[in-house]
Image 1 (tube, rainbow over the protein chains, first blue to last red):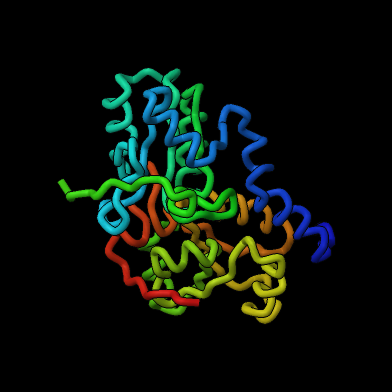
Image 2: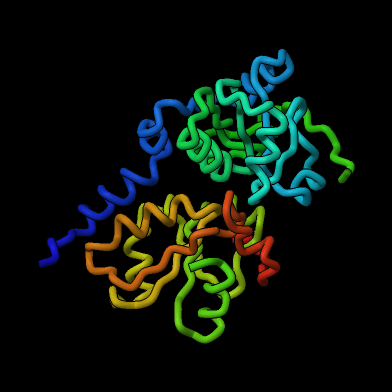
Length: 147
Length: 114
């Protein structure tokens, strides 16, 4: 027997539940959403390890956020991150991408894997549902030479 | 279903492919060739989906996002409400920790400019 579903009911379930980033993140209390300015400041002070998870083409197009390490979201990601952090899962790590979708995925996956200080940079480089983004805040981007 | 499998099924006319990301994401990466666009952030998401399928909940609709995170939740939410043949494209457009995704698989992408 299939429960009847109203449009309102589905939207309440699907839209409100899934689509509101704040709710999605509330299920993962270990993820902190941080605005780009604060992420930049903490990365420059060495308080967080900031990672740009976009692709090399995207790094070339815009440059890399000042203070960020580029590690492409790919099957090789975890090995590279582990190398960079020495495997320390308590180290504060902040992730950013173009709009905040991929960074949220990475943040959730790391929490599942036992990382304890995981940060999602709101809105990524260009802005998205969580924030206006790095570029709109006027924060520096460093040219990426493709090495 | 992986992005590569979705591309094959799309070519055979077996599925409808719907990209549920945001307009900003469509613009930045382009969209899969042959894909429809209905953003999950669109308050009329369900109405647009019903319009696309002609109200046929048995239609094979495959959903794609960036990493497979949003579509996994979407498919979970819709299944059990009569949408029995919907498909999650698990590695999305941009890939994830296990699979390369549509773009890095070298599958065709077309620009989206709204």
